[in-house]
Length: 183
Image (cartoon, rainbow, N blue to C red; front, side, top):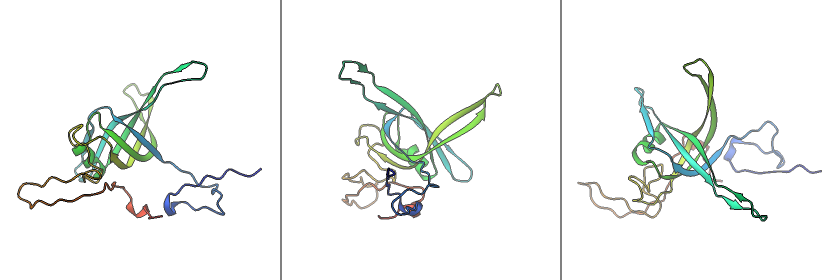
């Protein structure tokens, strides 16, 4: 029996040996497309860093099986964490109801509640974000994580600056651009 081989293009972070997965390799990668459940909470620290947190809802549509059984839609709520530059962009542009495309990693942390019981929380630490809501649907919507207008939209001139007409493509902000190789 031949092993099943699945190839992913994650740049040079992973070595593939003879097109078989390295047995020491692991992948922690999440892609979500969903709607923001409430306005983000952003904390700024004395060091200049920032952390934004907000819930994101993803919904699987309901459907009907061939035998007529109804499967209801199912909504999952995800705890989202964005830091530094992404947190600043979230603070400025992301609002309740916005549709977002997010990439990141799953992390679980623990803490003791007031009664001393150990609690666990699973969070998605975002390193790439695209805003999918149409411009004007929500305040600040239509921008990418780089703070630029989404693809095909024009920037509005700031008072006192010469007006320029410029089309820009959305370029997501990534926490570690050195890992972003063009192949």
